[in-house]
Length: 395
Image (cartoon, rainbow, N blue to C red; front, side):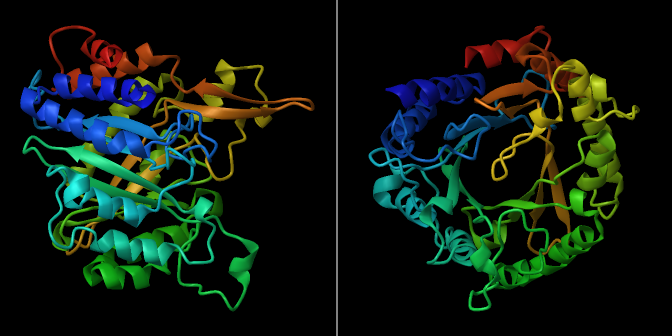
């Protein structure tokens, strides 16, 4: 019952807050109980901690509040979550494509998962591109997302973390067409995109140009390749990228627009809204200041020296994370940025190693209040003060 309490309760709260019909709430909660909880690993896992969250837990819940809804209208919210599938008996990672095949089968889907013909084509091709038979199974990290719609259907999303680069990758006998974790050369993706959809090439070439012209510390390092489990013509390839450095508003704007390559009137409106949210969440690193997030953090925690800011090499939790969507036939890239409100710090002493949390935002209430102010400025607020904090606490 551990994962039922940890996942089922907040998920139920989100469905209720989004005003899903009662029948759909029951269907979706039944699906989670019968088909998802069994993939979340043992309560006391003896396997690797998940890379999906900064605390190592194998689940992340979220919702989307569209920008074109009336204030107080909750019926347009999208409710979703993602897990890293783990065997509950052994604690070992489950293979991505096997999980997707099960969840889209008559038995695994319970009639709720969208499983039209060809919905797994992109995920199968991508998994084969990223992983070889010689890669360690422990390094083949995979997440599966569940997007719950008011139609009563669940759309799956696949997330693949490339394997970390090993000395054997330099061997001339090894196939060199794949991508590795933190790679900054995106040209090997051309062979993948030619198989998925050749019309993606124009967008990829834009990304290649940006990566090649960026300073090494600011290059977009590949962390995740992702796609929806939908028909090929409706799909998109998402590249999650995390630069080694760059946590100021100027850095965010630069990477979000690919150094000005994504330039249109709509982009200017998006940047204005994003800057407003940035300043509400991070007033100590205001967009008009010369201070970045880490400088502001050092001022807040004056006794924390530079060694406090070391992250796990394969699982960094600080800094800015971007994802760039490549949409077939568009020739464009649709960017998003994840703003970090907290992260994990590893502090080593000569006798002890500690892992603990630091916050770019002071606490959860500050985050909730900043979001509420943003929604009000953006025209999506509600009249009842504190509604964001109330909904978060209810979950």
